[in-house]
Image 1 (spheres, one colour):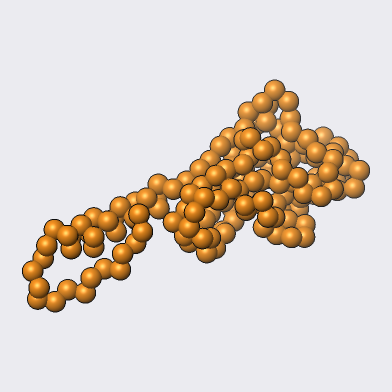
Image 2 (cartoon, rainbow, N blue to C red):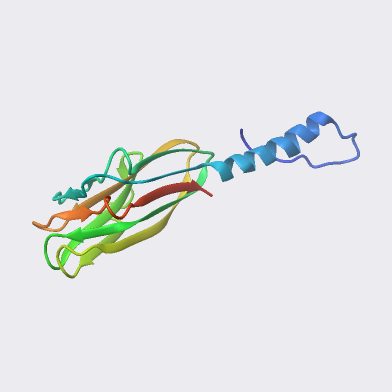
Length: 166
């Protein structure tokens, strides 16, 4: 349901049609926007891993969200842990919006792991401004530095990825 510009009232009689289109329908539109969200947490039998040095999807089933928006801003968030196979290895995190990386270079987060094989917390919240109305897919993407292997724990610690129209 779309927003209708409210009527500027004068001395004409109030009708149920006016109330429905100017009050009820606009309140429903605002409520639909509040209800528009998607999220998932990941659980599995083995940790996710990548050696890719270009951005790839972390998990196409659990860390990809589809959200139908009314047009406007979308807030995305992620909480989880990452680790590297080498000391001072880096894990780069990005988000793809409708299969296009949101940040073109090294993503939105570069997380340097000081010691190998230690889980480090990773969390972000980001705003995607002025997204058009319609169905959109958000995918969590990552890459590793050099000859490093990046891991995400989904066995003991369960990452969460979410999107909310605001």
